Length: 518
Image (cartoon, rainbow, N blue to C red):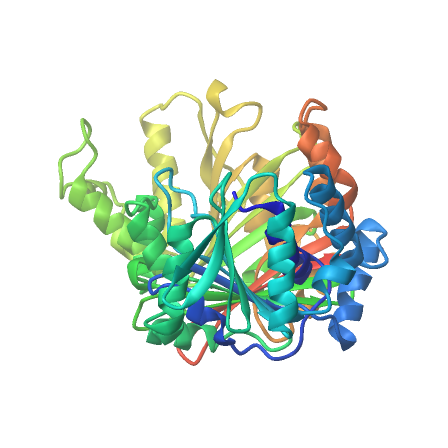
């Protein structure tokens, strides 16, 4: 671990970047990325000096969430106290602030043997190289363990005798690394090939949002490669069916504070030839008003077709041999290909205020009545075979319900009407998803309206009602789970969470908004 005495200026700045209120509207990368070795997996950069509207917005958020007037001052105070407790006192205002430059960058080169990100390499711009060197020398002199003076490629730096932390000044940049090897790699990068020279990094970081507090570059493909390509097969299948090759993907995330909300913008090349498109907001808005969570996916039929083809090709071990699923079901009047072709959008919603009332459903919209016919056929088939626990629905909707002790108090219900299909836990909630006019829709919810408005022109793809979600969690989470109950006062400040997705210049984009209440 990096020593507190040298990590303080970075934490007091970069933690203030991410949590407090510093930054400018310039989202371009600085020269600090040149200290990141080529192939680095994650790089985060932000501006350290508070200014203007951005600083006001972040301090407003701090006041709303935690009753803190100046979060940056609070972070510095806490870090100074921590340094003092460790026997490494630092006076930030006198020893650090006078030379602290505009930007700081943090690099995570790769993954360690346990699959976690490696210790960071930190680079901080300095406005006064002499004062910075004086700070390094003074902090090293206070150490109970002597520091070793090392020189590498013309750069003099110090290595902590107790834990190996390396710190030094490279021209006008304070560089801190977990060990001597990592420090030398950063020096080599600064004078040779680095992450900043890679076309993939340059193209990705260029899509960072203006006015951001901090920007993070993520090499998604590199993370997957170093983790042994450990991605859920179904998740990979869904990505690839959408034209996404995660092994080639990169992304940039930008944190943007605003008055009473926090916004995170994400842009990714996805590693595919074409970014997915579509708009499921109409379907989401038609879901029941009481839903505390709703997620929609456009073009779900393509993903369903991919899953059906894969399942047919592999078969069901012990039940059905390969390449027999489609033909077997078709002989029963169930054409999986036609069903997949007819499906357009999909959405999942959940509602309830406690365990007894908790329910939810998957709702599909289709371009024909093929899926509805199939649901009716399956219901007849199950009735004719006298399958235990199965009841055929009567009334306007066609379909069936299945009861089982493993399912709990509510049945699993599959219902269809016209060009809409609903599969849910509980009869009433399933029918509420099937018939949009049965209950007041989400579009009439005040919080949902605010969520949609916060996304501007970006179509909404996910919504969470903050107060309803916390209320449900309070009824489900035992008091022994102290993490939740300690976080509860802050969670209650969340009014809504909105996620919007879209495409721009061939890139997949996403916007996450956390709306807050005072």
